[in-house]
Image (cartoon, rainbow, N blue to C red; front, top):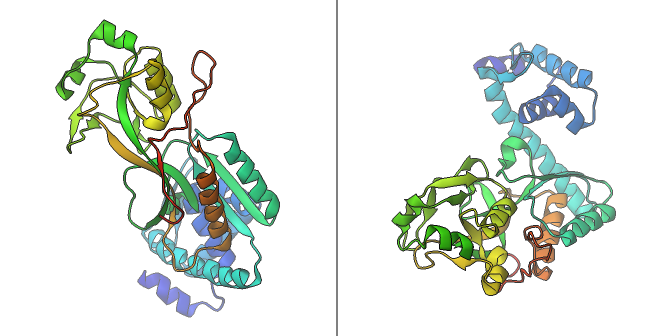
Length: 335
């Protein structure tokens, strides 16, 4: 970093914001082509800006290969400081837009794949009211790193949040182990958590990234279970349980109507389970960009009015599940 500071002092021309934006966006996107697309500029332009930045600083920032981009030590140091500079620029712009009442800029949102139609209606209505806002809505089960991956907002179901994020809870719901009567008739009913080791368990992915190996105990701690099938898609686990493929740990909002109809039954209800919450999360900042604040407020208002913010696809018999579950207690705005 000493070399960078020295060169900054010696340079006749200061580093341009566009050069820092090209550098940071390339690092975040891990690709010149994706960075160019997100910045709305030709790939050659982004490449020139990076080359100009390296020339100004007299230091190699990124090692480029045919497949990867790797930060040098100087690049890692500059990246940390460049993020601070660009955040400060964004904050300054946001302060002006907030006073003028204008909402514009980029808005990148990550949401889970299981959403109801009213969510799409809400997003479309928001985009139509604020045409200057350039929206990107990404659907996926993995928990994205907001800062590293360049997202402004994420909607996720989780039991814990990493530091540095603000969360506004939309709803809370219990998760319980369930199976079909046919499966239990064939394989037997587990009487203790240890019995799960001899059963076919349908496992989710921790943080949407790696297959789970343990299920939570209501009294604290966890128990290792035998995984017969794993997926980060809750709908697939739900259907597998209905078909008698094994035992799944699922939210009550998904299973309640099927418990009531007898299509599914609770397994070890006094032993296995946890509470999870659906929350909208964004980075902790002194001043939130107007487009982020407006979208978060709209999302919270939508969730308060929507009976079924998340639900699986139709069950195998084609009848849509009635998922209006009192088990999912709604939290008031700002909780």
